[in-house]
Image (cartoon, rainbow, N blue to C red; front, top):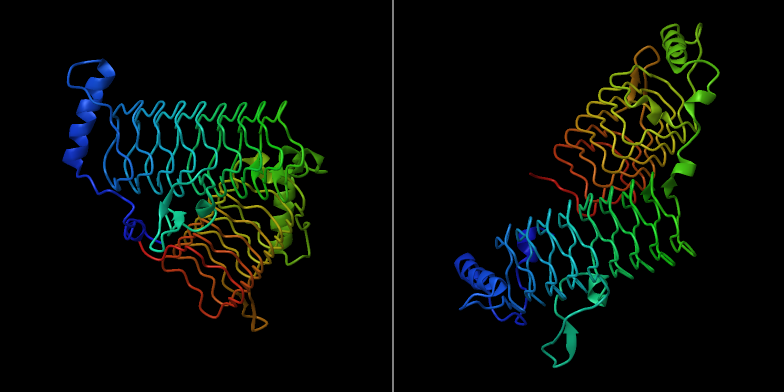
Length: 424
């Protein structure tokens, strides 16, 4: 659903919509209120449609915006200390650098919002929802067009970008942080009981003293996470990647990796008559930092960890890469022709111009298609990628950018394309 669609049909529950000039005038009076000057008036806007308006850089401390829609609004670097935002619709809003210290964020929907660098110390993110009377006279959720879990009152921060955000001491039981960018986030002492962090990037997050019992961190990235003294009972960690599961150390290799790659190149060029095939299965390859433009044709690297590496223009034709982790990698113009990548993870990788087409063996008049059954391409940039004739059975392309992407002849049985971006 587009931002424009989200701002339509918001219902009769709203009292009206402010213009930017009207909002600016109210903010001026609020500034006088905060300074204790004559004529000042606390900003109190409830159940209003404020979508798309600019609040950036303003001091809205101690104001009330409860129950209002701020879809796509600009709240960057806004001071919202002790502000009442109960039940607000903050989808797609820009809240980078905003300060929410002790703010009431119960029941908000911030799906798709940007919260990089926001400060949320002691903010209240508990469940809650705004109810209104529907056409039948029965109470119903204000934002009827918001799909679950928000309709059930769960605070929704799914898909947000909140790097280095500070949520120290936040009350966020049952909150949904699925698919969010949360690297270097501070969650010290936060109440996160039964919160959901599925598919979230929590690299270097600080959970010290946080309550996490019953939380779900399925498939989350947990490198460098501090969970000292955290309440970690009954936490769900299905397929989560932690420091303990990052893979074998390259120092365990019998020879230096440089020598092994050299031997592998010799093996490829001699069609197996000399050198030796490189096998990195189960290893944490990230110690190399980058393998840009490396020629690793026919390498074996199943269950290998390439997370976050620079692999631009890498050559991995006819390779065995099943269940390997390429999340957050730079893979522009990478060559995967004829490779097997069953169950591999590519979420949030940059794959512009990558080639997953069949490898053509002219000598044998044979085509070897790429096998990507069950692969994960969530949130990837797949612009100009060639998936022609690939096996994409059960692959997940949710929210991926598929501009000029070639799926001709590919097997798309049970493939997921929810929320894909098909145009700029």
